[in-house]
Length: 283
Length: 273
Image (cartoon, one colour):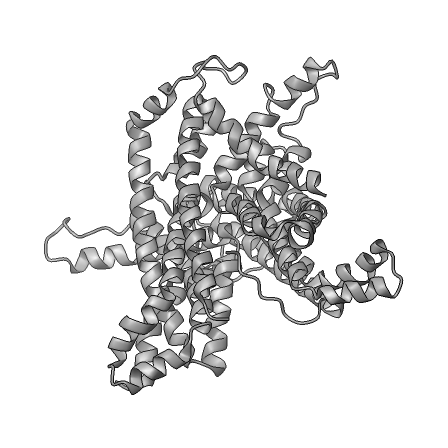
């Protein structure tokens, strides 16, 4: 067996799988988005832009997604950065691995169960009850944008911490010593050395969280109670309830296009200070 | 700084803890703790719908993880010898598989498979020798395995490939010089070196499939996986039984993750720098 033939054979199962279950379905979605709805739901072949012209009908879902996804990403960043800094710079090296694992582990456990936990905590018998026992009135928390953002930060924080940690850990500590020797106070060293050098991690983390948030369904469905819904919730409705596949396909295509455009623009914009590529594995 | 970190860890783990604590609550209502009881675990485990969903989830997770690990490992090994355009295309496909939102994977798989089945079933039926006995293709365990396995396979390739790249090449050359067959070298030199990554990839694939809700929601057909069961139960109202199921699901994934992490960290340490 020639090495070339062997390589081809070894790659064959993975390639077939990727083509059949990824490329083909994505092509089908694009084709369907130009089609028309059949009388009983489903799809009739056609070539029209009507589905795309109708996207305005789901404007609220797009608006919510495009507002809450960046806000959620920013909140994750603000909370994750100090933790990543602590883990990379301040934490006892003996405990570092364990502390890091403790951050990553929740990300790999069921997001469904973890969001469910917040239904419990934010629901009438949870935090609002505690607050009212303290005599501070009874705020309504569940089914609000606040609840959705809490769920988002809770769900995606690990994904933000890890890339920032990696870039901070790689940082050459001698640069900080040099900065101190040259008379910079710590805050200045942080702003002029640490922060710029951790930007690749910040960019990676923001991109990962933002992309996943754009397609989120579960957190708004569980914590937004139908009041705060994302494009993902509109997609579930279009495909599983009203069975308007062509319009649903157009919504999905629009979502992916918006994702690609924002991510490309973001990468262009960050390349200036992000420097080289920063490969980050999640394990 | 330290207090801040502690605060974040509390934020990450308190909600999980609350679920676990309330799953042992004797009372029916979330409001008060009324003493210790394991009755909700008994209720959950004797509920036939829960057990059936658990069985579906476990079957799908095991099958998709096994297939993904095999296909992914083979691909990761083969990629060593691939460069240029084919490599670029393959890498692009892997990143698309990982980065496209689960919901888009779910809907595209749904409409592609349903359309394919609508087209293929009459053809099979007309060709089948016995009338009305032809197999009908439909969404179910098979489509769940194929869709979950896709993401899992991309994950396995990425994890195993990193390990293959860090492998000590001189050992492989030495083995060949000493007259070992390529398969002998693979079994005695390559496999032991990359095994931690393969095992970690398998465990992560299993956890991914076991926990996935969104892809399964679209491609499960008439099957119910455990996350789908939990989701529809929550819609009907929060019960202590869900706390018990949730705690068990979290415990299973935590256990698997700790094993996977331990294996990976140990593998990393053993790896020559």
